[in-house]
Amino acid sequence: MSKHPAWRPTGADAVIRYQIKDLDRAIEFYTTELGFRLVQRAGPVATVSRGPLHLLLSGPESSGSRPMSDGRRQEPGGWNRIVLYVDDLEALVGRLRGIGTTFRNDVEVGPGGKQIQILDPDGNPIEIHEAPA
Image (cartoon, rainbow, N blue to C red; front, side, top):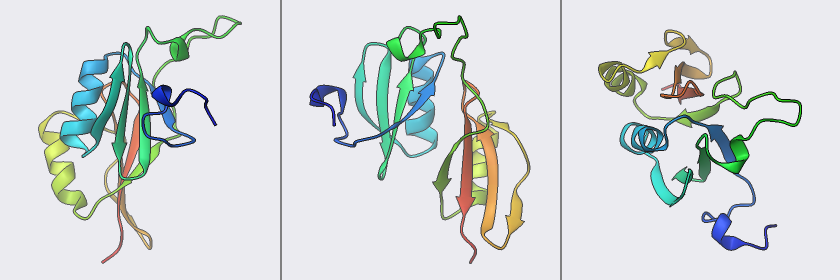
């Protein structure tokens, strides 16, 4: 547990960090389009929350975005992803298409419900899932 609660604005013992390129754009996307709320913004980082999920948005100037000792750069993207549960997948997909969101696939339907994957404005993956009726 951190001895510095100011760096843990959610009080959580863990958060998910997403590397992002533009902090203002990321905050706008997560709060306006996906129902997160801004918990804290400090310099090049911000924490947004949706229910118990706390997401640390880490801009390119943050210490958590520095290159590794071997020179590899931390970049947005990949296949690990957060999963957001929604009640009306079709409505959200329509809204996201309307703002030009990038989709990785079409809606998939299976025994566990319906889901689709999108990319946030910096290329980080998000799965949106609706449980079966």
